[in-house]
Image (cartoon, rainbow, N blue to C red):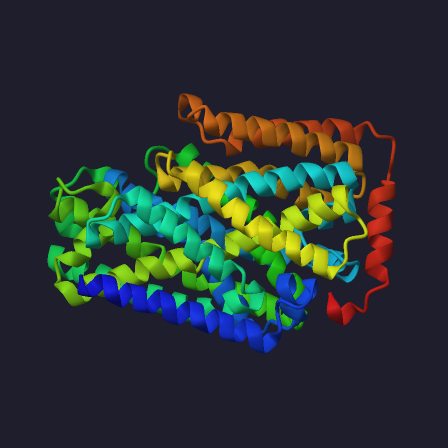
Length: 475
């Protein structure tokens, strides 16, 4: 019970920090403040915002759960995201900066800037589906930790967590970034401590290899195509990371954006090993434990204090991500549905009102859907792979001058549908969604581009014209 009150105090304090920073920055007065922190984010805030998305509560708890069941290969969801950040910096960050200079607030708006309105709508649907899946996992992940502490039904606790996420999302981007400094610090220290204690107790990897099946220490389990598909799917999916793009849009400068997200990626590469090892150690120490709560169960072996620290770390992981996901969903729905389709002349006041109502509505609907989901990590990994199709198309289109709006639209639409159907069909034949989605999407892109009759498409020429009007130091 003491651990529960510590966690409650932590949630109250961090929420107060977010609202305080929000009120000081007046981040609820206009859309640029609420969605983009008035383009005033420095590298530290950017780093912690980015770290929060990559090590979501669902992937932290989910990584330990997956490692308990199948081994260290669970690291690839996070490692793929980290690689995606680095690919983003060197390929499309300039593209998003150009889009931002031309008034883009969201990922779909940037796609309209390069292609057309219908491509924007397809990407909007992808972003809403993917971030809806990712947010839906967050209340359940938090409830899995808190519910057993006070013997409350996990469904009830999930709804309580959803309510807290909604309140925290209403502080806007800068407030969320401020809260994430606390969340990320607690998360890294807490999960790292549990991993260290578990490693010391089991006596290292050599002891585990003598007891558990050999695949528990392999990173390519169950097979190489799954490993590559998960890693590359997460990597290309991160080209459409709304938090990553928001960091580019809201950064003080190009240097601040690139520095912040790169440091976050490096921190995540190390961090991913912590919950994965806790899961494997849990299998060695407590083979009959419940997989879904193994991170907390292992921490509990080392006393109430460590158990409380682990609880705060898991809650920190969830709260570093859940509100940001809700803000992403709200921004996308506001800018790419409400403004683009319903009320193009909506002023700041109308947009903010719709956005805040969207935060409440999406939070409740997504939580309901998440209560019926199965594997947490597989849902997150599948979500990344669905959006990877658009990421691959974007990278190609930034460098291949012939790609036009028709080729982009059909490749993203059909490839995304194939990836989504493959994911929700349970990944037939053990093949992850990245492969069928991108094979189909890239094939369509190649055929339509090679036959469009352009040496340089009008869409690409327009993009180059916009880019040439921006000072080089800002790109």
